[in-house]
Image (tube, rainbow, N blue to C red; front, side, top):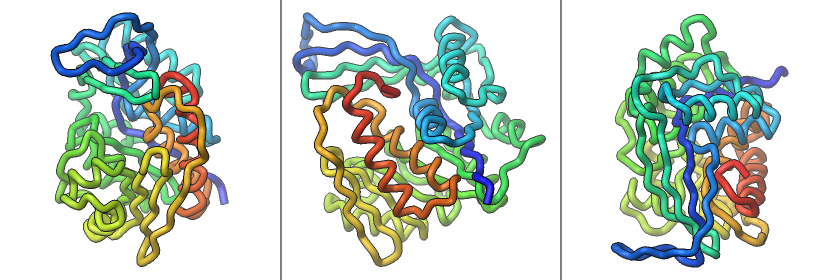
Length: 287
């Protein structure tokens, strides 16, 4: 069976990162850090991770008609992502301001910019001449408006393709989200969505809403996969942590690539946890 395509509809940001000994408290300035600029945006990060895992990736996104946008698209092209469906809008390219401490923990503030202009019409236009097919996988996040999320999810569902949604930043799941959507929240996002602080109960509550597997990430403890009645712990290898930014995006991208290649959810999830763990050993959301 030929491998399917990973179809990503998501955000593109430029990450401006300051690495510090410790994260500042509210109202505090912490000096002495180092600066770096990286490609970012949860959608773009997922796309790159899926390509590196061997998938063919189409990307629908939006950038501004500015230097940040031009460089962001060039980086995606260099990584092997199909950029033909990325549009330039009269808004600034999205920017994330990220502080990372000596233990790899982060604080992130995002200016959405052009990402907020990604709408259902742009998704529909991308699919008009090249629709999804059974065996494809659609990757989504909440860094774009619900209209774009739902347009992509419905198109995938109609085609028999799988949908994987990383519900971050956490907000209420749209009522029209198709049943069968696989969710990949972290523990805090799952608690926000369900009110359950126990990961197993939170994952089961989400599974009851979507009738699909839930892969709930647990940081250094790996992930919990709830699929039907089974709950499987997926431990993460112990690694020296440099930067946790983008680890959840790597997980989603590798999961999508595995599913598009015909792997089971459990096998794809194990690969995704390993890849996400490996990613935190390097600086930047894409390593």
